[in-house]
Length: 65
Image 1 (tube, rainbow, N blue to C red):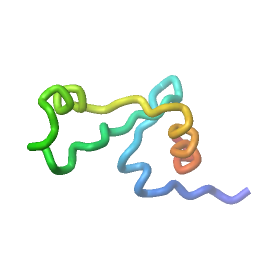
Image 2: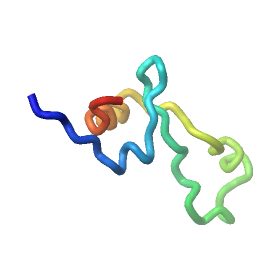
Image 3: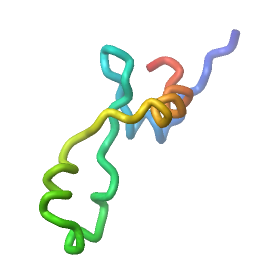
């Protein structure tokens, strides 16, 4: 069986936790901060655990994660 390639964009953006969940950056913080509320910016710090439907897609991109 040949080796599977990892999507290089996914390996830069996502990490797998020890329990197998996918951790990624919070969306919506690249630009346009003036129109966002302080509460949104506060809650969008750091990383978050992806939902199962999104995590399933990302796990296909990280076969050896």
